[in-house]
Length: 288
Image 1: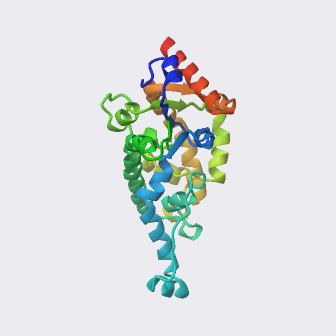
Image 2 (image 1 turned 90 degrees about the vertical axis):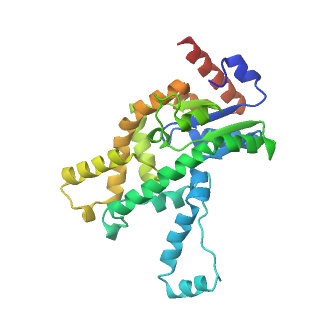
Image 3 (image 1 turned 180 degrees about the vertical axis):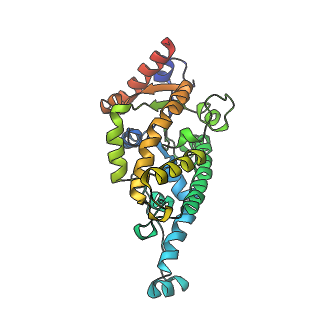
């Protein structure tokens, strides 16, 4: 670990952490709280994906739809209007809407092939955004003068890494630069996470083999054709399946750092509380 002891963490001039875990457990909440203090740079992986690496895909989708409207087509062709997404740390809807959902086109569904194409785009974008973390750690201090850094990773990070490989490129880049912190959920959180996801879907990448298998399972269990799948029902169902699939992957990643829980996060009201919480987590890890 980057900080070998709790005291080393507390005494550090620069504290750097990567928060990871399922979406909805408090990563962005913690990051926003730390950023609001003024001493922490908040690097959002999903924001980086949606602006730097997939921003053109997103804006082109909007332009393609606008070109179907004669007035907007004329204005676009004469560079009279600008169309783009307004993605923010707390509003990732433009990225989620681009990734889309497979199923019935009359319900806004994509063909499964197109959905998989966009999944591959997201895989590449998330990989690059994660590998950008060391650069942003240096940039946050060198350009902006922030003493501390928090990386708010996406819920899909566990699909992109091999925790058993000590030379995994992504984990090596992250763990060499910051302390890995797992927000560990459990079965008690599953229902609430699914409810939140249903209300406001987050951008989500799944490994191709997992996604193809779940698509086939869904078609068989529901007895529906591909173009009659309810897109909303499929993504909710797949997300709930992914919770169990991802838990052991996160647990393996936790060996690269420390673990906290949503209950721990709920007690954090200030950066000082967060520093104490991570110090306690380092002590627990060292006692194992």
